[in-house]
Image (cartoon, rainbow, N blue to C red):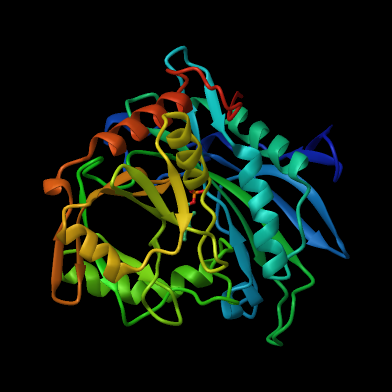
Length: 365
Ligand SMILES: *Cc1c(COP(=O)(O)O)cnc(C)c1O
């Protein structure tokens, strides 16, 4: 295989290794896409060695060769991001706050002793990959090109310390809605036994280890008929943190509440966008500690008007019911609330280019 080189910003050049024609895959049926199951023909890859990111290249999508001793596999030294490209009605492909994702990736890198990436370089590399794979970006309603940048530690030995070698890659997945039922309100189990992250841990970082800690509680909740769990703080198991892969919002007496970023909550870009959109709609948005028992009392008095999760994958996901031990709280009659709907419509409107973007959040590829 030959690599053709062309110049790009730091750390140098991006090579291109063409896929043999027989490895090019057939495009999926856009109307039947699920989330994160299909990947395109190419991926972006670069290596970290001898103190620098090198050998940036776009190469055929395929399995990685890793030493079985490699540290990402044993000690979870890895970080990732998740963002989307959106196909607008005019056929153009749009990005939403993509720079924020790569900046957050560097925050995760710092926490996990992973070397930082050059944000401009990573953005350019991602755009180049997206342009190459533009035909894969679906245009059916509510579909997107999900983008997964990842860094894994690949030192091939078993000592516990920061690796010296890393692999950065970006893969693309044409996707449908995260929850198969779309905007239908979900049932959430308030988890008061297991915790996802504690203050001082790595809850604010986007890293696989946080998800590993969450799988058992998620599986138990699913067996009981719940979609996800709502995590409480790691010390008192009393203050609301977040939901699986989403931040959480409550509309209480006309105000929008979300837990303040306390170190164990992932600072969602959708969360920050919802806060800004709510303010722009004239809804008072408050970041604060939210006591789950007080929240249930507010609910019992009819003062909890709406609840929803927010995240890139799920966008806005209304919560129809919360269970805390033996107490069930039905929210807004298990219906999508008007503010949740309006935030969903506005956010997706901006993302797909149906609405003007007063925030400067979007760009065309
Ligand atoms: C990615 C993620 C979110 C949502 O963040 P967005 O930037 O809005 O996609 C929330 N919680 C966790 C644990 C996450 O990993």
